[in-house]
Image (cartoon, helix red, strand yellow):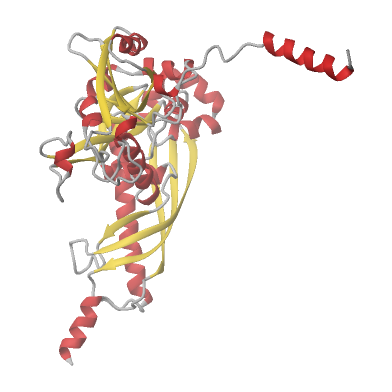
Amino acid sequence: MGRSRRIILLLGLSSALLGGCWDRTELNELAITSAAALDVSKNGEWTLSFQVVIPSSISAAAGTAGGPSGQVPVVVYSTEGETIKEATSESYMEAPRKLYFGHNSILVIGEDAAKKGFSQIVDLYLRNSDSRETVSILVASGDGRSILEQLLSSETIPGIGLERILEKQERYLSKIPNVRMYDLIKKQLSPGRSILIPEIIISGGKEVTGIDQLKQTTVPSKLRLGRAAIIKETKLVGWMSDDEALGISFLSDQVNSSTIPFISNPEKKEAKDSTFAVSNSKTRITVRQSEGKYNVTADIKVDGWLNETGSSCNLLDPETIRKMEESVKTEIVNMCKRAWAASKKANADVAGISERIYRKYPKQWKQMEQDREDVFKKINLQVNVEVNMKKVGLSNKGYNKLSKKEQEQ
């Protein structure tokens, strides 16, 4: 037997001994979830809801929910269990396909579940390899399932639409950070053990759960972000307004860009008639210890431009710009103070000041860790803001002044 024949025979015998993919799962056997929700049932058990994509109804050419057949793009169903994993496993009692969470981008925590505490679901995400730690977390003021049932007019799959809302808000408003599972885990292991999570609400009247409701220019309701949920040790302990949450973003150096309405001339007007667009913000936190108390100074430097004004002031006058900068500064300082007061009221360090103290005074922190809540209440915060209005736009005069001049002529 020639050398080449022996090699061919050896390769043939070897391939016969090799096994196939023993643990493979075909795509048509999977139920792809785009969002999930966690609630607590009336009998105290965990209720898990899943937003499962219906592949046959998804059309790449359709810009709105529902394909050419008019079928809804997702289906939502719930299961219950004494533990969260048991509730997930109960899906095999009714679902023809195995749940797949690899593309799950949203987790909505119902208000009752948030008050009870959802540390078990964090543990579940840490233990299971098929769970995504990049999933974005939201808190619903009611039950989480109703959020999953709501269809969006501009996105085929609601879960993906919610993720994009979070990303755009974080990028252009910076009021509430887009909190992912790994962010929550890191914060719960930090000295402060607190974090803000966006609230998701159904704004409007009747819920949009069918395709026919989307076949009009105005839908009866929509999903939108609301307040900020104050989470301490994976439990809901209070709420902040979106403006207070923006104050926390300034204190924790998480502002990418934003808009600040302000009074152009506080000496003559009381109503806010102008808008400052924040292009850059940098916060420096300084901690000092004195007589058992901690004095914290937040130095915030904000750059931006005048985005809108109802003033008739001369924008070429440096004194006018200085007054506007002072007015914007006052708005940011007050915003930060209100946010700090709300944080102290909930006794939750969502701004991460405790972590700053721990880094600078690790030995003292170890001694007072048992009484960290009392220490947090006694922290004195000083906010210093520097505002630089670098541009005033294409016109150096307000439209009011231009229109008055035109009328005079």
